Amino acid sequence: MSREPEWDDAQRDALLGLQIYESQLCRCGVHSTLTHDPEQRFPLDSDTCPVCAGLARYDRILRDGDEQHLQRMGSTPPPGMPRPSDGRHVYVHHEPPADRPVPPVQLQT
Image (cartoon, rainbow, N blue to C red; front, side):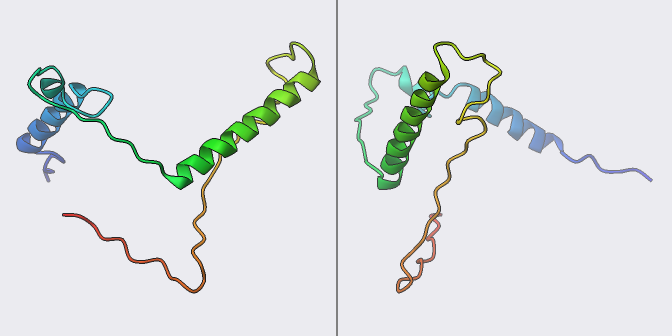
């Protein structure tokens, strides 16, 4: 009994092409063929997400508390001494109002 390979040549070629393409992306997500073309324009825009803003404030509050804790521990606590931030993960939980159910997500195609 022989098995078919998991990937055929066309699929391998497509994945290799994707890997090459992604390796040429700038950290901003735009491909280098566009970023290095002087005729391309990239107007900048910004948006403020209230959830991200809340996370940033919460992170500052936690870091401030961590710094105060380290100061109470002394000038140079040993690196192996546990810190309040060790293993900390901050999560956002969405709690919609009870009288308004969450609308279904509209996927863009």
